[in-house]
Image (cartoon, rainbow, N blue to C red):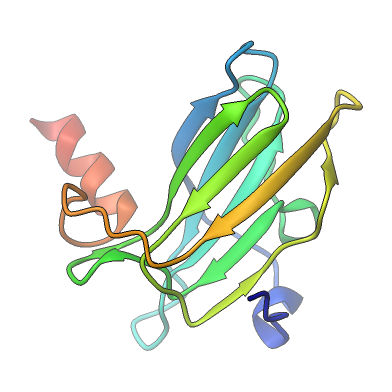
Length: 140
């Protein structure tokens, strides 16, 4: 079920790219941007379809926007998977709000269809935010 975000979508994103998933043909990437807001708000996740290596992901161009998304009870975030060159699935256990425009047209003129799939639990996702997990892995 898609719920349109209101005030959350109105502000600019200043988040970090926390995941980069290449399409099967490697012509595009799905990137996940995590915006931490502040200590009193949940994480905001944007999923954008971009050219390889691009970090450009704004709310206005996001394929999917999820606020308060969880991969399991200990882990914030989403998991993204390409099923083929034209289909992306964004998986998450639950989220407070979600928004998704369909279809999204990439910057290469290819139609990419994005599906949100809730109630998917990733027990292997590390505790905390995706950014914290990414930076902890870099230090190891």
